[in-house]
Length: 392
Image 1 (tube, rainbow, N blue to C red):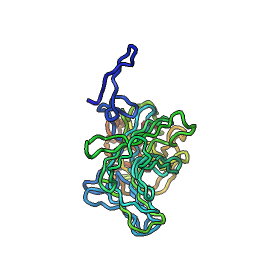
Image 2: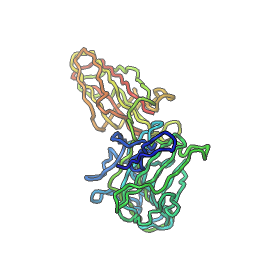
Image 3: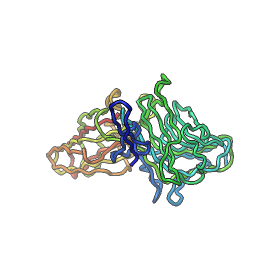
Image 4: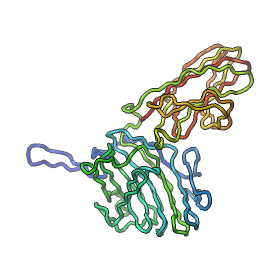
């Protein structure tokens, strides 16, 4: 069962759990893992979930069978990358867990291959730095590599990165917690640790700057001019606990926005944006809608619609409260187009209502915008307000 009972030689008896049955903090792992972000490519590379990025000339991201296929092309200074729009949340004292599969290309000098939980500034992963395979910790844009021959638990000499393997990363963070890298043993099926970064009691700077991170895969040529191809079919990242608890969150509300609309024309009333950067850093914070308040005063019913990622024309965005949330609002836009409709609410001609959205999964991730519109057959004065939870 993966446990043993033994005494400490005095009077105490303890149950000790082996690594494959313990979470990042060595507690017994139970079925409470909360997935936060991930990818799977059975049908396509879904742009609502995945951001693709290339150098725009030679690099390419394509869907091949059931995998994302990242290719540099046969050129120097080229790259291809995928990254989840969502990020895995960090909560103090709750361990983070990442699992993914990948097929790495034959290595070449002047190239890199990375897969893991990271952005351009922070994170952890497996990959190649030139000809050498290893694990890395990225902090403030610098990769700290530990190569396979230097792994301190097992150098796992039978590993063939050019074949599909299951990789795992666990991290405690808290600024100075341990990070554990593991690989599934193809002979036993056990996901076994190969390297552990013990950070506590060794440094004054935290291991990384920001542990709220997306899943990312990236292949890049610097001086190499052969086509490097990295493939990945599946990945998941999350927490060993309740990722949506309120331990580090706060509630924020917008002011009520009131607009006189004309009949027969859908008009944008309020747009909320979670920007890509916050406090000069990559923004990885997300919000969850709690309530939306609507009111109308006219001669016909009013339909309120909610869109994700519409294109807004005119107006300016301003911070709601820059010390509490990165979210910004625009109440002076002159038009909108496109986007994905994610909600419709209809109220009477002279009526108000408060919609409970706590079970709706309405969430706003960095780089996304939520726009509320109103439409009525005749002119009406309409109002809307939003209350949301800011996860930190």
